[in-house]
Structure formats: structure tokens, C-alpha cells
Length: 283
View 1 (cartoon, rainbow, N blue to C red):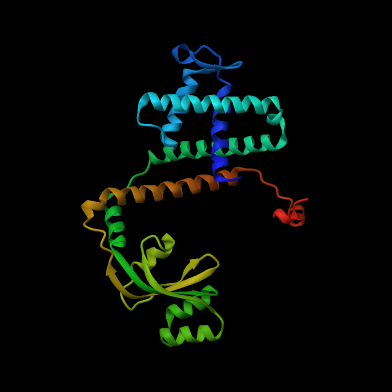
View 2 (spheres, rainbow, N blue to C red):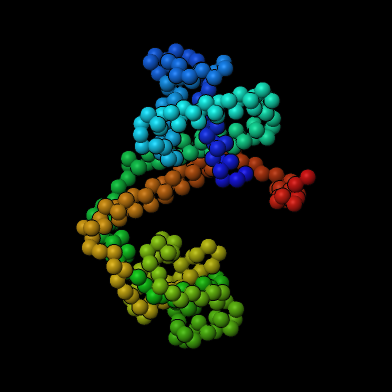
């Protein structure tokens, strides 16, 4: 589905979802602003659409012109919906699937937003945390990252009894040194648990092994320079928000993990293996 068509369809969905409340007397907001055949567009419906419209697309600055354009768009949408209903398109499986997907996405978004707001009330960032984050963000590191097969081999490089470069060479010859990356790194470029180790290094020193996905990482710091983010007072609020957002995201991850742990989940692995996905495999 093209981008323009997709957003047009979503706009119609919003209107469809509001239809259920139409025609009922809800006080001033229940007054009918327009009638299209047997459909009554109330002030409440119009205002709901207006709120969404002003935040999602351009409308004329002139208030009366904006209202006229929005009303015209809503009438056109309703005429199209009535036509689709007359043709029975709203009963077709494909349409119902589209509605189901949109409903699921909206429900998930509402759930996560509610939980996020709940979590955010309980978290904050201390001055010490902000200062530590600032010190990290104020530095850019030129470092070598070595991805190694197995913790034992990573420990060999860390101990470097033969010297760092000689040990690295031997690991490469044995096929245990899987990848080497040397570049400038700034805060946010690496997973947090890796940064916690790398940003504490002194120039010329290397880190203890750190698990990175299915590999082990050892880093060596070559050079350091200032990032130029400015003095702490100037960026304090943005750093504080960065920390709070990160804590919130972690809390949401823990919450989702607990939900999975409490759920009863059974997977038919044999059936899963038999399924072929991709357009070319659909019958």
C-alpha cells in the first residue's frame, strides 16, 4: 500500500471508529453540524477530527477557512464510506484484517503509553548521574574493538602475557579473532554495558572482556578528544532527559519480560519449521 493511500485509509479508520458514538445526545457536543444521508456528524465528532488534523497535517491559518476545509474533507470521507458500505466492502475479509491490524496497533500504543507514563513518575536523574553522563558525552574516543570467539580467548588477549599485539596476532592466526574495528566512538555508539567499560579506559590501555551478542569484546583506547558539546549548565536538561528516557526504556523492557514470564506460551516447533514465509511462498 502506497504512503499516501495508507494515510488516507488511516484517516477513514479514525472516522469509522467515531461513528459508533454518532447520533446520541451528549449535550452541546451532541448537536449535529452536518447530515450526510442518514449519518449525523456531531460537534464532538468534528472537534475530535479537528484535534487530530491540526497536529498531523497543514490547514489554512484562517480559522474559518480551516473549518470549511476540514468539514469538506469529513463529508467526502463519509460519502466514500457510505458508498463502500453499500458495496459490502466493509464485510470483506481483507478490510476486516486491515481494521484488526489498526486496532491492535492502537491498543498496543495505548498500553505502552499508559505504562510509560506510570513508570516515568517514579524515575529521575541525580546530579551525579548527569555529571557522569556529561563527562562521557564530552569525550570522543579513538579506540580499537576486537570481537573474539569465546571468553577464554578474550581473556588471553586481556591478560596479554605475550604482549597485546603478539597475542592479537596469534588469535587471528587461530581464527579466533573474528572482527577488528578501529574508529572514533562517541556516547551512544555502543551498547551501554560496553561503553561503561570503554569510557573508563586510559590511553594505551585495554579493557576486560565484555559479552557482545554471541561474541566477546576487548577494546584498546588509542586517543581521546573533546566532543565540543558545551558547558554542563547549557546541556544539563537534555542530558537529564536522556538519562530518564533510558531508565524508562529499561523499565519497560523489564515489564515486558515479566509479562512474557507470567504468560503461558506453547509453540508448535514442528509446524513452525514447515511454514514458508515470503510472498513467493504464499499459496
